[in-house]
Amino acid sequence: MVKTTRRDPSAARSTRSLGGKVAVLATATALAISLASCATDTSSSGAASDQTLSYGLSAEPTDIKTGVDQGSAAKEVVALVRRGLLQYDSDGQPAPALASEFEVSEDGLNYTFTLRPELKFSNGDSLTSADVKRTFEYFAEPENGATYQSQFAGVTKIDTPDDSTVIVTLDTPQTAFPQVLADPLSAIVPEDPLDSEGSPVGAGPFMITEYSKGVSFTLEPNPDFYNADKVELDSIEMTFMPDAQTRVKALTSGQVQFIDYVPASDYQSLEQTDGVTLDHVPGLYGALLLNLTEGPLAEPKVRQAIAYAVDRESLNEVGTLGYGVPGGGLPIPEDNDYFDEKQAKHFSHDPKKAKDLLAEAGYGDGFSLDLVTTSQYFGYTERAQVVKSDLAEVGIDVKLVTGDYANLISKGDSGDYDLLLSGPPAAMSDPTALTGAFIGGPSFVRSYGINEDLYASLLTEGAQTPNGEEREKIYHELGEIFLKNVPFVTTGQGTTAFAYSDSLEGFTTIGGALVYSSLYSFETVRLTD
Image 1 (tube, one colour):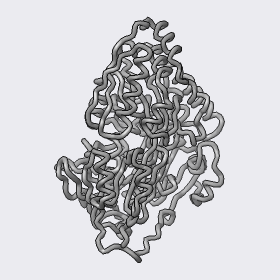
Image 2 (image 1 turned 135 degrees about the horizontal axis):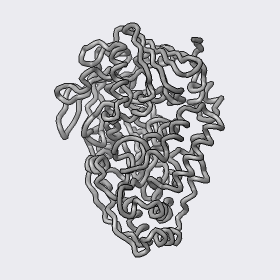
Image 3 (image 1 turned 180 degrees about the vertical axis):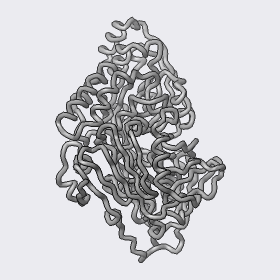
Image 4 (image 1 turned 180 degrees about the horizontal axis):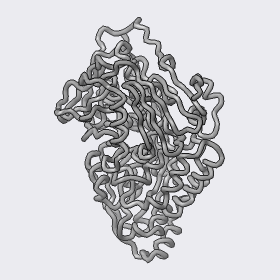
């Protein structure tokens, strides 16, 4: 094996090529990353004497299943309490975490990771290469529902020659394997991933020391974290605040110092509020998920009709107040090199064409559907009303079924819906993330009853092909099948925001699919006077 030093992030930006900054890592025949690349200036001057951060969290996580996407609030908590071999740095690049370095063989099949010395979980148990092996094997089992099951299923062998060395062998190269490992959902867990109290155990910078059901989490620094001396917060008081206006008022009144999931309706007022910083960035893709198993929605022409019936400009206006980007193709962000503008604009708002397609499918007299949404987050109810109005115009009667976000997740996971407002999973910027939108068991982020076989071979080929024109052709072909079959109706890229007191120093918001990995930066944030 040959080692090369990881490029400086600024150099990566200046050499952006197909596949974005990620390409710098993914196409190297061999590379290594070092502890020094994670160095952060944490000068203690100006630090407040009280390092207790009060945090208004948009939802109480219903569960924190190992490796499973349980929604944004759960991801935020996982990013604080667990760590994987890698994590994302402030530039959205894979960076060292439990592994201080790794090497890739020239054929891209063998990854050799070196763990930091004397790693421990927050329960005091040692973390060794055996834990990495067992965790990856757990992710690979389909019944465990891990978000990256298909990627870990491609691991043919894991060798652990000693406690600090892990050699992962893939059946074929995976262009985005470092990004998979950097996602919070790929964190390493002990043999019993949940302790007896139901609190997640991990090897992250914080650990949950108190849980008041329905009220709050208290997090304190994990003394066994490998960078424990860089953690400056003494505690995080995380209060569950599902109502958006409650969160905003709590921030502006000083009750809390940090809130997530800021509604677009409050962007302007928060930008004008003294002492408050608002970071709003391009967020995740939104979609209208469909139960494809029976009835009218099992017919592709009906799904095409719905795609033509919805007005994405209106959905963007009411759902994001115009901060987002409407689009109807594959859920690939506009700034990604694999974004296809022509495909994204394929489903222009055309009620007449929608009616014609319904007639061709034998549903010219219309039918009724239930649409599951939630009133917990801004934009859902508003978009649901637009969908209801748009579909009524072409003869489809929609009944709105609303509830809290946990209800939406539950109905989505069980397939108890006709239509459901959600979005495809996208925890990394590489199009490999598309796999989760098409492949896997029932989930609130994936249409129920999707024909996986229609997409599996192209998704696999795309994941294994190096960045470049050949890979672009693969995703274009995938996009053409998507437009014909319409397994879900994409609405476009939304917007996401965090808001926090100016006294919080060091927080970095990463945009796009990585937005909830922004919580990695809590490792070194601090409060100032």
